[in-house]
Length: 95
Length: 185
Ligand SMILES: [Zn+2]
Picture 1 (cartoon, chains in turn blue, yellow):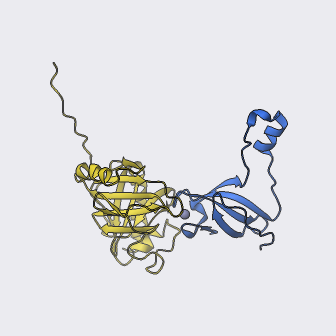
Picture 2 (cartoon, chains in turn green, yellow):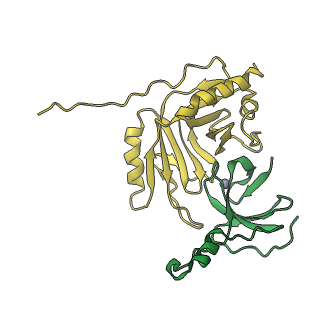
Protein backbone atom coordinates (compact mmCIF):
# COMPACT_ATOMS: atom_id res chain seq x y z
CA UNK A 1 0.00 0.00 0.00
CA UNK A 2 1.21 3.51 -0.81
CA UNK A 3 2.27 5.43 2.30
CA UNK A 4 1.45 9.13 2.39
CA UNK A 5 3.67 11.21 4.72
CA UNK A 6 1.24 13.35 6.72
CA UNK A 7 3.20 16.34 8.12
CA UNK A 8 1.37 15.86 11.43
CA UNK A 9 1.11 12.05 11.79
CA UNK A 10 4.00 10.69 9.72
CA UNK A 11 3.69 7.99 7.05
CA UNK A 12 0.18 6.54 6.89
CA UNK A 13 -1.75 4.27 4.50
CA UNK A 14 -3.21 6.04 1.49
CA UNK A 15 -6.77 4.81 2.23
CA UNK A 16 -6.89 7.32 5.11
CA UNK A 17 -6.45 10.26 2.70
CA UNK A 18 -8.44 12.27 0.17
CA UNK A 19 -6.81 14.28 -2.59
CA UNK A 20 -8.11 17.83 -2.95
CA UNK A 21 -6.66 18.67 -6.37
CA UNK A 22 -4.02 21.19 -7.34
CA UNK A 23 -2.60 23.43 -4.60
CA UNK A 24 -1.81 27.15 -4.61
CA UNK A 25 -4.82 28.24 -6.67
CA UNK A 26 -5.86 31.51 -5.09
CA UNK A 27 -9.46 32.66 -5.34
CA UNK A 28 -9.61 35.98 -7.23
CA UNK A 29 -9.90 38.82 -4.75
CA UNK A 30 -12.69 40.49 -6.74
CA UNK A 31 -14.70 37.87 -8.71
CA UNK A 32 -17.02 40.57 -10.08
CA UNK A 33 -14.08 42.10 -11.96
CA UNK A 34 -13.53 38.90 -13.97
CA UNK A 35 -15.16 38.07 -17.29
CA UNK A 36 -16.57 34.60 -17.87
CA UNK A 37 -13.42 33.30 -19.51
CA UNK A 38 -11.21 34.41 -16.63
CA UNK A 39 -13.64 32.96 -14.07
CA UNK A 40 -13.77 29.66 -15.96
CA UNK A 41 -9.97 29.67 -16.03
CA UNK A 42 -9.92 29.98 -12.23
CA UNK A 43 -12.56 27.30 -11.75
CA UNK A 44 -11.49 24.66 -14.23
CA UNK A 45 -8.04 25.19 -15.75
CA UNK A 46 -5.36 23.09 -14.04
CA UNK A 47 -1.75 22.44 -15.00
CA UNK A 48 -1.96 18.61 -14.80
CA UNK A 49 1.79 18.20 -15.29
CA UNK A 50 3.67 15.05 -16.15
CA UNK A 51 6.13 15.13 -13.26
CA UNK A 52 6.17 17.10 -10.01
CA UNK A 53 2.72 18.35 -8.98
CA UNK A 54 1.71 20.43 -5.95
CA UNK A 55 -1.52 19.05 -4.50
CA UNK A 56 -3.79 19.49 -1.51
CA UNK A 57 -4.38 16.39 0.59
CA UNK A 58 -6.69 15.74 3.54
CA UNK A 59 -5.88 13.20 6.24
CA UNK A 60 -9.60 12.46 6.44
CA UNK A 61 -9.48 9.26 8.49
CA UNK A 62 -6.57 10.44 10.66
CA UNK A 63 -5.78 13.83 12.16
CA UNK A 64 -8.39 15.57 9.96
CA UNK A 65 -5.90 18.16 8.69
CA UNK A 66 -5.37 19.50 5.19
CA UNK A 67 -1.80 19.82 3.95
CA UNK A 68 0.09 20.29 0.70
CA UNK A 69 2.22 17.69 -1.04
CA UNK A 70 4.63 17.53 -3.95
CA UNK A 71 3.97 14.31 -5.83
CA UNK A 72 5.54 12.99 -8.99
CA UNK A 73 2.61 12.09 -11.24
CA UNK A 74 4.75 9.66 -13.24
CA UNK A 75 6.04 7.50 -10.38
CA UNK A 76 3.30 8.36 -7.83
CA UNK A 77 6.10 9.07 -5.33
CA UNK A 78 5.49 11.70 -2.65
CA UNK A 79 8.54 13.99 -2.67
CA UNK A 80 7.62 16.12 0.32
CA UNK A 81 4.66 17.44 2.27
CA UNK A 82 4.23 20.84 3.88
CA UNK A 83 1.64 22.78 5.83
CA UNK A 84 -1.21 24.75 4.31
CA UNK A 85 -0.21 28.36 3.75
CA UNK A 86 3.47 27.59 3.23
CA UNK A 87 5.02 28.35 -0.16
CA UNK A 88 5.74 25.56 -2.61
CA UNK A 89 9.20 24.07 -1.87
CA UNK A 90 11.69 24.72 -4.64
CA UNK A 91 11.94 21.16 -5.90
CA UNK A 92 11.62 20.39 -9.58
CA UNK A 93 13.21 16.94 -9.88
CA UNK A 94 12.10 14.07 -7.70
CA UNK A 95 11.86 10.40 -8.50
CA UNK B 1 -51.14 23.29 33.98
CA UNK B 2 -49.69 20.03 32.68
CA UNK B 3 -47.42 18.07 34.91
CA UNK B 4 -43.74 18.32 33.90
CA UNK B 5 -42.64 15.09 32.35
CA UNK B 6 -39.17 13.81 33.05
CA UNK B 7 -37.69 12.32 29.92
CA UNK B 8 -34.62 10.17 30.29
CA UNK B 9 -32.81 8.93 27.23
CA UNK B 10 -32.19 5.24 27.73
CA UNK B 11 -29.47 3.38 25.92
CA UNK B 12 -30.24 -0.16 24.90
CA UNK B 13 -27.21 -2.46 24.65
CA UNK B 14 -25.73 -2.23 21.19
CA UNK B 15 -24.79 -5.86 20.75
CA UNK B 16 -25.05 -9.16 22.51
CA UNK B 17 -21.85 -10.23 24.30
CA UNK B 18 -19.16 -11.69 22.07
CA UNK B 19 -18.61 -15.40 21.76
CA UNK B 20 -14.89 -14.68 21.46
CA UNK B 21 -12.92 -13.80 24.59
CA UNK B 22 -10.42 -11.84 22.49
CA UNK B 23 -13.11 -9.36 21.34
CA UNK B 24 -15.33 -7.93 24.06
CA UNK B 25 -18.20 -5.46 23.71
CA UNK B 26 -17.62 -2.66 26.23
CA UNK B 27 -20.40 -1.12 28.32
CA UNK B 28 -21.94 2.22 27.39
CA UNK B 29 -19.83 5.28 28.18
CA UNK B 30 -20.10 9.06 28.12
CA UNK B 31 -17.98 10.70 25.45
CA UNK B 32 -17.16 14.20 24.27
CA UNK B 33 -15.41 15.63 21.25
CA UNK B 34 -13.39 18.69 22.26
CA UNK B 35 -12.06 20.91 19.50
CA UNK B 36 -9.93 24.03 19.59
CA UNK B 37 -8.02 26.01 16.99
CA UNK B 38 -4.42 24.84 17.17
CA UNK B 39 -2.23 26.95 14.89
CA UNK B 40 1.48 26.34 15.04
CA UNK B 41 2.90 27.71 18.30
CA UNK B 42 -0.49 27.97 19.99
CA UNK B 43 -0.49 27.40 23.74
CA UNK B 44 -3.21 24.83 24.45
CA UNK B 45 -4.59 23.95 27.88
CA UNK B 46 -2.89 20.98 29.54
CA UNK B 47 -6.03 19.74 31.32
CA UNK B 48 -9.79 20.24 31.52
CA UNK B 49 -12.50 18.53 33.55
CA UNK B 50 -9.98 16.13 35.04
CA UNK B 51 -8.73 15.02 31.60
CA UNK B 52 -5.03 15.34 30.79
CA UNK B 53 -4.84 17.12 27.42
CA UNK B 54 -1.06 17.47 27.40
CA UNK B 55 -0.26 14.42 25.27
CA UNK B 56 1.05 14.89 21.72
CA UNK B 57 -0.98 14.13 18.60
CA UNK B 58 -1.99 10.45 18.33
CA UNK B 59 -1.47 9.71 22.02
CA UNK B 60 -3.79 8.94 24.94
CA UNK B 61 -3.60 10.02 28.57
CA UNK B 62 -5.62 8.58 31.44
CA UNK B 63 -7.00 5.26 32.63
CA UNK B 64 -8.81 2.55 30.62
CA UNK B 65 -12.24 3.81 31.75
CA UNK B 66 -11.47 7.54 31.69
CA UNK B 67 -9.08 8.96 29.14
CA UNK B 68 -8.36 11.73 26.65
CA UNK B 69 -7.24 10.63 23.18
CA UNK B 70 -5.69 13.36 21.03
CA UNK B 71 -6.87 12.66 17.50
CA UNK B 72 -5.87 15.92 15.82
CA UNK B 73 -3.67 18.91 16.60
CA UNK B 74 -6.70 20.55 18.28
CA UNK B 75 -9.08 17.62 18.71
CA UNK B 76 -9.59 15.22 21.61
CA UNK B 77 -11.98 12.33 22.23
CA UNK B 78 -12.82 12.32 25.94
CA UNK B 79 -14.31 9.13 27.39
CA UNK B 80 -15.59 8.49 30.91
CA UNK B 81 -17.92 5.94 32.54
CA UNK B 82 -21.63 6.32 31.78
CA UNK B 83 -23.23 8.84 34.13
CA UNK B 84 -20.03 10.78 34.90
CA UNK B 85 -20.50 12.97 31.87
CA UNK B 86 -23.26 14.95 33.56
CA UNK B 87 -20.76 16.46 35.97
CA UNK B 88 -17.80 16.32 33.60
CA UNK B 89 -19.32 18.45 30.85
CA UNK B 90 -19.70 21.65 32.89
CA UNK B 91 -16.33 20.99 34.54
CA UNK B 92 -14.60 20.93 31.13
CA UNK B 93 -16.45 24.06 30.04
CA UNK B 94 -15.53 25.99 33.17
CA UNK B 95 -11.87 24.96 32.95
CA UNK B 96 -11.79 26.27 29.38
CA UNK B 97 -13.64 29.50 30.11
CA UNK B 98 -12.26 32.39 28.08
CA UNK B 99 -11.14 30.19 25.19
CA UNK B 100 -12.86 29.42 21.93
CA UNK B 101 -13.70 25.75 21.88
CA UNK B 102 -16.42 23.30 20.86
CA UNK B 103 -17.54 20.51 23.17
CA UNK B 104 -20.01 17.99 21.78
CA UNK B 105 -21.46 15.05 23.72
CA UNK B 106 -21.20 11.96 21.51
CA UNK B 107 -21.74 9.22 24.10
CA UNK B 108 -24.69 7.76 22.25
CA UNK B 109 -22.93 7.91 18.89
CA UNK B 110 -20.16 5.40 19.54
CA UNK B 111 -19.83 1.75 20.40
CA UNK B 112 -16.62 0.35 21.88
CA UNK B 113 -14.80 -2.97 21.85
CA UNK B 114 -11.85 -4.24 23.83
CA UNK B 115 -9.33 -6.48 22.10
CA UNK B 116 -6.92 -8.27 24.38
CA UNK B 117 -4.67 -11.29 24.40
CA UNK B 118 -1.61 -12.20 22.37
CA UNK B 119 -3.40 -11.89 19.02
CA UNK B 120 -5.22 -8.59 19.56
CA UNK B 121 -3.03 -6.75 17.03
CA UNK B 122 -3.28 -9.61 14.52
CA UNK B 123 -7.08 -9.54 14.70
CA UNK B 124 -7.16 -5.76 14.20
CA UNK B 125 -4.68 -5.98 11.33
CA UNK B 126 -7.24 -8.02 9.41
CA UNK B 127 -8.82 -4.65 8.68
CA UNK B 128 -6.38 -1.94 9.79
CA UNK B 129 -3.41 -1.05 7.58
CA UNK B 130 -1.34 0.53 10.36
CA UNK B 131 1.64 -1.15 12.00
CA UNK B 132 0.24 -2.10 15.45
CA UNK B 133 3.41 -3.65 16.85
CA UNK B 134 4.65 -2.51 20.27
CA UNK B 135 7.37 -0.39 18.66
CA UNK B 136 5.09 1.44 16.21
CA UNK B 137 1.90 1.64 18.30
CA UNK B 138 2.92 1.18 21.96
CA UNK B 139 0.58 1.53 24.96
CA UNK B 140 -0.29 5.23 25.17
CA UNK B 141 -1.00 5.50 21.43
CA UNK B 142 -4.31 6.57 19.93
CA UNK B 143 -5.44 7.40 16.42
CA UNK B 144 -8.32 7.59 14.02
CA UNK B 145 -7.99 5.14 11.12
CA UNK B 146 -9.99 2.71 8.99
CA UNK B 147 -11.03 -0.84 9.83
CA UNK B 148 -12.29 -2.41 6.62
CA UNK B 149 -14.90 0.03 5.36
CA UNK B 150 -15.41 1.79 8.68
CA UNK B 151 -13.78 4.77 10.32
CA UNK B 152 -12.65 3.81 13.82
CA UNK B 153 -10.71 5.28 16.72
CA UNK B 154 -8.06 2.96 18.11
CA UNK B 155 -6.84 3.66 21.63
CA UNK B 156 -4.23 1.77 23.57
CA UNK B 157 -4.58 2.49 27.28
CA UNK B 158 -2.50 -0.30 28.77
CA UNK B 159 -1.71 -3.45 26.81
CA UNK B 160 -5.17 -4.01 25.33
CA UNK B 161 -6.67 -2.16 22.36
CA UNK B 162 -9.89 -0.20 22.68
CA UNK B 163 -11.74 0.27 19.41
CA UNK B 164 -14.46 2.92 19.04
CA UNK B 165 -16.78 3.10 16.05
CA UNK B 166 -20.08 4.74 15.21
CA UNK B 167 -23.01 2.92 16.72
CA UNK B 168 -24.65 2.05 13.40
CA UNK B 169 -21.38 0.50 12.20
CA UNK B 170 -21.06 -1.66 15.33
CA UNK B 171 -22.69 -4.84 13.92
CA UNK B 172 -20.35 -4.72 10.91
CA UNK B 173 -17.26 -4.06 13.06
CA UNK B 174 -18.22 -6.75 15.57
CA UNK B 175 -18.81 -9.36 12.87
CA UNK B 176 -15.56 -8.37 11.16
CA UNK B 177 -13.54 -8.75 14.37
CA UNK B 178 -15.17 -12.02 15.40
CA UNK B 179 -14.53 -13.43 11.96
CA UNK B 180 -10.88 -12.39 12.13
CA UNK B 181 -10.59 -13.79 15.68
CA UNK B 182 -11.68 -17.26 14.58
CA UNK B 183 -8.30 -17.70 12.95
CA UNK B 184 -6.59 -17.39 16.32
CA UNK B 185 -9.13 -19.22 18.52
ZN1 LIG C 1 -2.42 13.28 9.84
